[in-house]
Picture 1 (cartoon, one colour):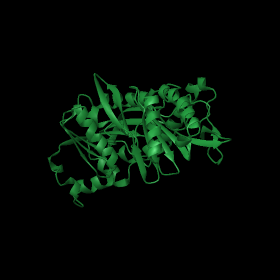
Picture 2 (cartoon, helix red, strand yellow):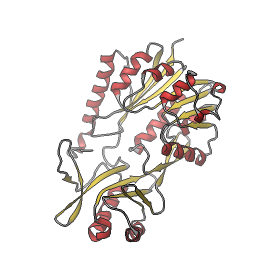
Picture 3 (tube, rainbow, N blue to C red):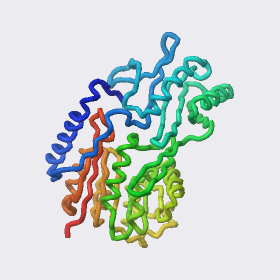
Picture 4 (cartoon, helix red, strand yellow):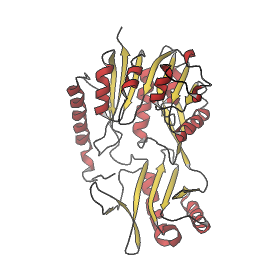
Length: 365
């Protein structure tokens, strides 16, 4: 990640440019979105996780980043887009690295994972094996910073106490807690994440209480608050780490109407089409579900052709996208059978070209 932090007061103008680009992409694809609800981000202090290169030069360690196309990194003096807790932890961590040879030797990266509820996890990554002396010094640092610490090197992960933080977000009239594991995907902007969850929940509130199919459920970020609107939910996710976190999160939030299966969207499509059986689905009777709605939050590549056809079977489609280009491509086909009922854009990544968006569609009568 390389960001020019100058002119932070120009936030609205950069968001306006992204909105113009979003509508242009849709129009060029022939997708009609007249107006989308816009959810702006705070212009600073919004990023809950960050990864820095550690640059060793002239006997000192500094935080550094690389600009695209440049091999030599540039030194980071401050990090205004980072959450307050990241900025609070950066100076004492750097001081500890510069004051302790055991902690700093061949340490080339530091990763921060924080929550809006005040928890933090720091991962230090090394080009050398970690030994007992490292653990002694790291535990002392963990105590000093009052923050969980993990050490990583090739084929080694040393967890001192825990490898996750717990985020708490308000959705409607209820709070949801989420285990966020160090190696798993999490939404980096807690403010925008909360707004996305509330928007999605409002879209599906007052549903007909049938069943929901979710593809790409991750750690259950959307699944947990959406489940209250349905009798049953079948959610799929390919990552073992994310599946385990999702199960933990559903139990922590006392949600008992969700089944999670470790399948890709493509595999689930094959299962629903009766093209092949899956042992991972042996304990689930797919035919017993009465699906009315499908929720998808795919990677940047969007929906593949078969999954695109699959979602068109459902009465309602809720689509969260991290790439307007692939969203537009998918909507070209989906719009042949479904109309757009609501749309929103979420500035998940201020000061970059990326823009998150959401579309609710319903089948033509």
